[in-house]
Each structure stands twice: as structure tokens, then as C-alpha cells.
Image (cartoon, rainbow, N blue to C red; front, side, top):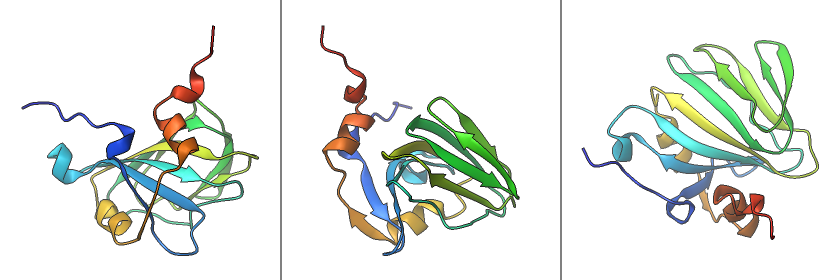
Length: 145
């Protein structure tokens, strides 16, 4: 099998519900990955958060790329920052929220897909802006010499 290569300009982003304060940029889905998984970057504006949610079968992992926040899972709350990972087991009710003054970016992987990408795509398409593209392309980390 030939590996699938994508760059941030190829990602499609959505806001699941009109009032949501987070957006999801789809990196890989079951069709492109040929496997039951969803990989996306979840982008939270300051003060943004997910609604409380849980998954019947899926394990969900969040890796913090940029920003600061708080994760609550089954009543336990921890602070999260760049480099932190959070693994959410099936049936665990969880919320991720941005507690910082800038956007929070998390890499999110869900296995199996459990109709997650279909839920994302059923939302409203949104554009990734310059800040999003800098973070996703990691050019926000480049330092002039």
C-alpha cells in the first residue's frame, strides 16, 4: 500500500453545531486511512470547549500541540499544556476546554471511528485561517536567525 500524504492545505474543517466554540480539521478518516479511525486537529478559541460527550466503543486520544486547557474525564480534572497526552477510554464522559488567552490546538485520534467523522462532516464547513495554518504547518515554531 502506498502511504497517504496530506498537508494542512488539504484538511477540511467543520464546526459540528452552530454554537460550538471548537472546530475540527480532518486529517485522516476511514476512507483515506482504509481503517476505522479518525484523526483530526481540534481547535478551541479562548474559552472554547467541547460539550460533555462519550463514546460507546472508541478510545480517544488528545495530544496538546499548542495552548493551555483543562480536561475533565468522569469527574477528574487535569490541566493540559503542549506535549501532554490524554487517553479517554470507552464510555468515559469527557470535556476538553481552553483556559488560556490564545487558541488551544489538540491532535485527536479516535479508534474505531464510531461515526465520528460522519458527525464532523454533518456540521458547517469552516475555513482555517492564517494562525491555524501557521500552527498546523509548524511555521509558528520557526525562529529567524
